[in-house]
Length: 286
Image (cartoon, rainbow, N blue to C red):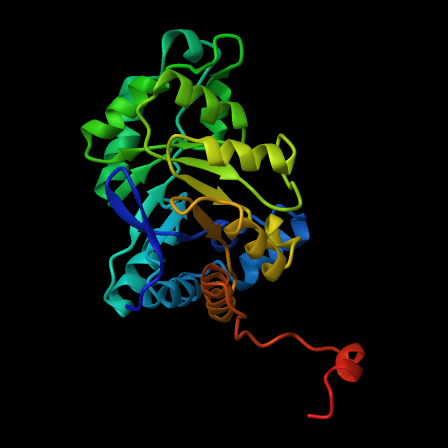
């Protein structure tokens, strides 16, 4: 396994580039037709394993998402076996919530069941998904309600707690209240795609966060080209922060790693450019 820059989350060494999984699961954030295309051409265990293997062999050993969703867990295991590298699992499970949950707390029995499954499948960092985290954000009391109990149950099972969120307030309130988490997931891209505040505000929030931040959607779900998206994000986060990328082919994975390393090292990336007829006149005579 070759090297890739690393950071620490709760004392655990993780790669600063993280393997995203939305493409593996058929979630394009674009159109139903794009979702259908991904499901037809990408979401097969062997194809997913091919992509993950490329990352693992280059030292990008951290993967984030709904790991229990088939066939992802099986693909990770296959890629691990091929590469001889153990993946670090950052899981974002959902938990049931009702209108009473913010006052009365979570269903502890159901949470224990879900977390026991997470532990059994080897989750290292457990981050309640934005679909539950953001329901519990209270702007009046400036807290993420009842999340302390969930974080305690995560700790009890030997996993590192974090928060997956699309709401900037969740990070601010967790920091203010000293919530026992070691990292945050935050959307961050130059386009402002899916971000609740302007890009410069989110940049400031990330810089001020008390814990390392795992940024997601750096290429705005494919709406920003990798060169622009990765150059912006890598150059505006801290050394302890991370970037999560989703890819649909092994070659895309290689390109994202090559671009990221070149950006971090301050050099020109040796990545072949795509070509069209309109570029012929600027190529030179060769």
